[in-house]
Image (cartoon, rainbow, N blue to C red; front, side):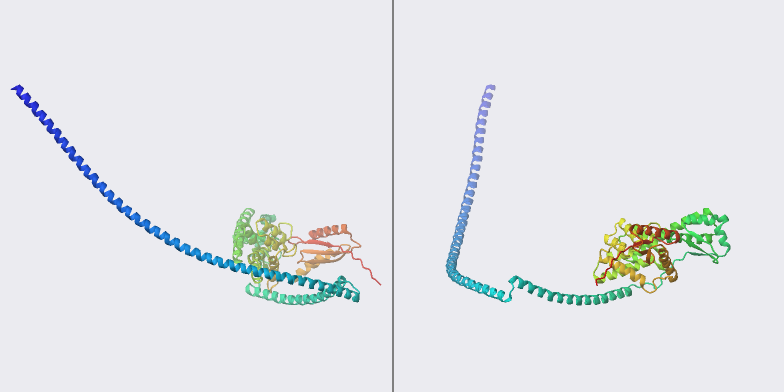
Amino acid sequence: MNLLNIILDIVFLGVGTLLGYFLHRYQADRALQNQQQKADSILKGANEQARLIESQARENAVKIVQAAESEIKERRIELNRETDRLDKRRSELDSRVEKLEQREQALNKRQSTVDRRHNEIEKVYQDQVAKLQEVAQMTQDEARKELFAAVEKEARGDMARIIRQIEAEAREEGEKRARKLIADAIQRVASEHVAEVTRAVVTLPNEEMKGRIVGRNGRNIKAFEQAAGVDVIVDDTPDSVTISCFDSVRREIGRRALAKLILDGRIHPAHIEKIVEDETKAVEKIINEAGEQAAYDANIAGLHPEILRMMGRLKFRTSYGQNQLSHAVEVSKLAGILAAEIGADVNLAKQGGFLHDIGKAMDHNQEGTHAQLGAEFCKRYGVHPKVVNAIASHHHEVEQDSIEAVIAEAADAISGARPGARREDLEAYIKRIRSLEEMSMSFEGVQQAFAIQAGREVRIIVKPETIDDLASARLARDVAKKIEETMQYPGQIRVTVIRETRSTEYAK
């Protein structure tokens, strides 16, 4: 039984193995058939798509060939037309060349005829010139010179007459134009007829205050004069004392300080120094504000703060009663109007007019005229060279380099000369001028002496037979020294000695 079971198991195992093998073989064949069918289907689709693409490509190629053949045909037609046109143009050019050659031949023949005629005319001209020279008894060059001299003489006469006429018309028209410009400028600048006057007089509440100001043994007045840098004049004038100083700023500080001391009542050296120091700061603030306000009123921007501060000092400076800061603003406006009317640089003209008297704010402390000092000061702070020249030349101490300098000088003269601008003490002015001239005339060898520029310069004319060149230099030094010793004056006075030798003979 066991053996039979084993045999049966072996038989069943073999049969199962065969069945599994055949089943696997069947499945593999079936899968292979499916893949073959798929491959055939894909290949069939690819062939159909290839045939379709090939058909479309063939159709596109046919269209491209047809289009190319059509374009070639059109190009060939166009080329034929162009060829025909070029052939026609070539034939026309050939005909023109032939005509030009014929014309050139004709011109050559005519040129030869003209040359022959020219030679004949030249010969006739030479014969005529020779006959004219023989008749006139002068050469051609001599005749030309004589003709040119006559024409030149006549032309010069006409030219001189025309020049005189033009100069007269220009002078008349220029005077009319100048008067119109000045009148228009004065009308457009509305200024007060009487400018403010700075007075250095302090009113006292009573006569007892004079004694308190002087102090014991004069200690209060000495301390005040030393601290403020001014002279205090206490005289018989009732209820007032006078502050005297060439520096207008220090005079103003002294006036304010003394007025404040009188109100305060405490007058002693320590308090005097404190009050003077406080008023100095207050006046410096006023000076800065005045300079900035003046530049704003004159419509001038871009100036250095130090220049504005120096301009502010002119608030306390007057000239014959005319406030110099107001005068500067007025001159700036006048210069701007004149510059605009004649086409000059308005900004430079206004700056030149505004800064022309800036040297008056410093001419008490330094040697030199206010024009020179002002020009050097403004040049140091980067002011435009034309403006510097306008400042230096507004009293003709140097040459004027621009029209703006001339305008600044004219505006200065207009502002100072208008009615009511300045209050002049005629008697004191004449006395000062006369004393300068008499002092100069007191020296030996002086023929004439003239004080000019409001007493800022003395010109002395000497006798050449008495004073030589070396003595002229010595005389100028002696006169200047005597003026320094005997006169009081602000700034400086220029002394100029002139020596001239003339030789005259008479022909009888």
